[in-house]
Amino acid sequence: MKRLESMVSVFEKVTAGILFVAAVFISVFYGWDTELSVSILWQILFLSAVCALGSIILPLEGEKEKEVSRTAMLVRTILYFIYVNVVVLGFGFLFQWFTFDNGWQVLGMELAILFVFVAVALIFYWSQCLEARRMNEKLKKRG
Image 1 (cartoon, rainbow, N blue to C red):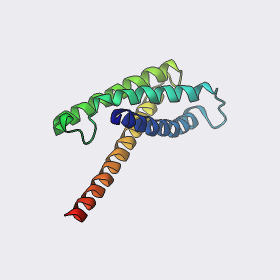
Image 2: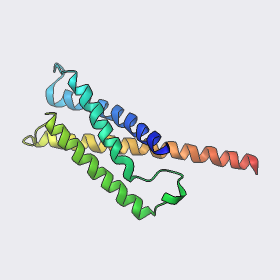
Image 3: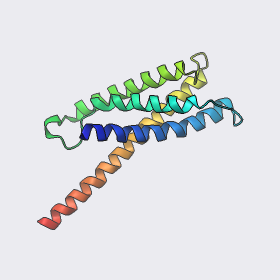
Image 4: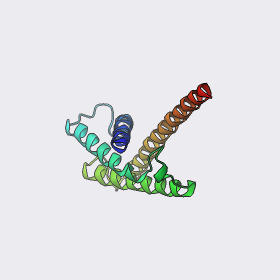
């Protein structure tokens, strides 16, 4: 159940991030007057879900049996970043969000991927710090 909650949380944050960078990307590369089909909303939801599914390689916070070393966590994070890159670039190309012929669009997609990935990671880190702080405060009150 905790895994599902984690994946839903990733899905929510990735969806918000993709919506933000899509607005910027479309404005920069296609202009403010671009008209889009509603299908882009379904594409964003689908892409967010596929990205969230990949988060299964990351360990859940607080599960003792799944504790990993710093090195293992770094490797898993890099693998997840590669997974997200392949997913977003692959489906983005299939959805015709960009073309590999336009180097600026590819760079824009990579920057968008990096921005969303880092933003989601920072939000998770911040929320875990807040949770740890709350737990420490409760322990101090008990002790």
